[in-house]
Length: 104
Image 1 (cartoon, rainbow, N blue to C red):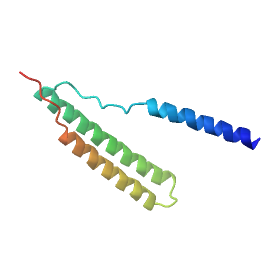
Image 2: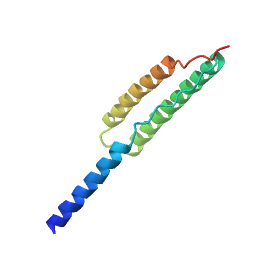
Image 3: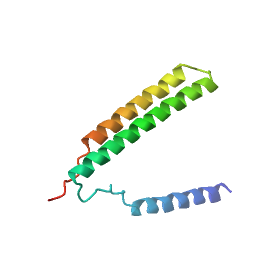
Image 4: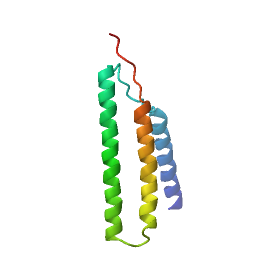
């Protein structure tokens, strides 16, 4: 019984190893080019979405605090700190985004 189990585990590991080797890493999608106007518009939309998501997440954290006071305010504070870090990173990435400009 143990030999059968070990054999099955080894077969699963070998097959998963073969499948993993055949997979190529995903290539990030890049726009061919972006006009100056589109770049400004896209960046503004991304920043607005990040602001909305942050605001929604803070509301969610506070709602959780109201529903379950266990470990509060520490739990909410931990979640808020993680949210702030994610918000800052998302804004930084949006502001540094610089796709190739379209030739005129």
